Length: 240
Ligand SMILES: NC(=O)c1ccc[n+]([C@@H]2O[C@H](COP(=O)([O-])OP(=O)(O)OC[C@H]3O[C@@H](n4cnc5c(N)ncnc54)[C@H](O)[C@@H]3O)[C@@H](O)[C@H]2O)c1
Image 1 (tube, helix red, strand yellow):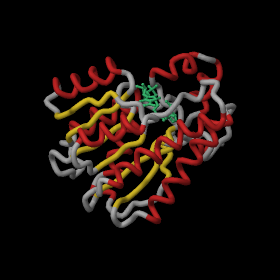
Image 2 (cartoon, rainbow, N blue to C red):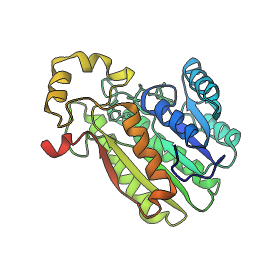
Image 3 (tube, rainbow, N blue to C red):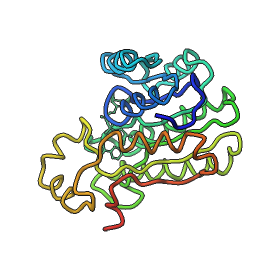
């Protein structure tokens, strides 16, 4: 898998213990990157790293809650110089959370991790990809905090793209309905089924569909792509 990365450059992926983050971590290792895989779930992140190593890749695990600045600082210093950052971890939209607390957990964490990374002085050619959502950016959803938080991630990405380039590039991904562990119940529901039926691709997304787009946006192949919000949704938003 050749995205043109320099072998051994380090990528941090938050929430790499499951779903989309795990797929990004596995694909990044196959693309020659050294993976610093972060998650608050210890068993899950150790399993991701073991899988990468069994596949011949290079990875280290960090048990870190991105809402804890001390844990973020520790994980970053253990990672060494980080060229690529993927802000993927965030609370599930199905959770009942206080609006302000949830915004802090959704977009405040993205800002905090990115800011800590920027303070390390990433090398030229560095890039970040933030995982937003079609929710809040293209469609409204039931969860007030999720819609607001994911739209805020897109706005924060535009800030980075305009105020931090050319030192880094910043882009965001808006996944549609992606079949990951957190979506298992939804996939089986009537609404989940109808979403698939109304999707031009007639299926839910795979985590690898998102991972490929993330790695492309980080890679030298996307050297002049900065500030985009890329839907990875099978064309669902253009049918709405
Ligand atoms: N699955 C979808 O349909 C979909 C759609 C749009 C956006 N997204 C976004 O993609 C991202 C990943 O979702 P997923 O479906 O892969 O979820 P998932 O539940 O499969 O995986 C999320 C991982 O993040 C970890 N995590 C959660 N909070 C954390 C924290 N504070 N610190 C460290 N790790 C933390 C969890 O332990 C878990 O391993 C989320 O930001 C989500 O909002 C998902």
